[in-house]
Image (cartoon, rainbow, N blue to C red):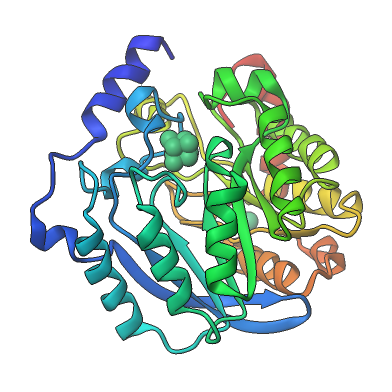
Length: 339
Ligand code: SF4
Ligand SMILES: [Zn+2]
């Protein structure tokens, strides 16, 4: 991948500025299974329509196509207020609430401070835990403190750390910050009485299956003392990304679920008291992490159950005939054969 490919892909993915009717609708709302500690709970997920991640305009991460879900300009406070009304119409007092913006909730260009506080207050006394995502540079005491105090419950701040290897993060994923900045932000977040959560990426472009498993396992070992929870996200092919550009040219395959199982099992053994989870997007589909097609559903169900229960032992019993093929291809990958 060249610099010019990354920039051309970044230019094309940002939509033209949205009209007011679009700006009043969230991108998506749904609920899903989750856990808070040992309690199985429902989580309510809202994706707000904002200007999205500024980094996606500068360069963008190689696997991230979230800019396509954005407004192409900043939403006004009034537009965000109407989106919040829509969110609350669908909210059924789920204990866990996750609010995403296709970027950073704490970037004032995406969500202004008043709208952040209004949203947090809306869930005060109704949700036990509120999660949002941010880049490390926006994780300041004033921004987080305002939301924490307005919400009053458990606040969780997620950081897209992806990898603790500087080269992987800067050259393969194209992040603008170093792992050290992510770890420092996690420590800051914890010092504000808030729960830091990390996302790690399984199989950035140009890593083999074996290298990507090792990258996740090493990252869990480095990150675990800084984060209360770590979520491993296997790459799925998003539109308008460098990863899609490679995929279309036969130069990238999403990770095998066997790699995810291996990374989770090894990571779990070394996670200390940190919660380790994975809820793959597009699991079992050609553009998501997948195996042979026959075992995918079983493997995905086992991974979800392990994530919710934190009992990883049953993963050892998973098997399928395709494991032999996976091992064979994986051993050929260093020779330039695509797994
Ligand atoms: S992965 Fe995060 S930092 Fe990178 S472009 Fe997407 S939203 Fe921005
Ligand atoms: Zn199989």
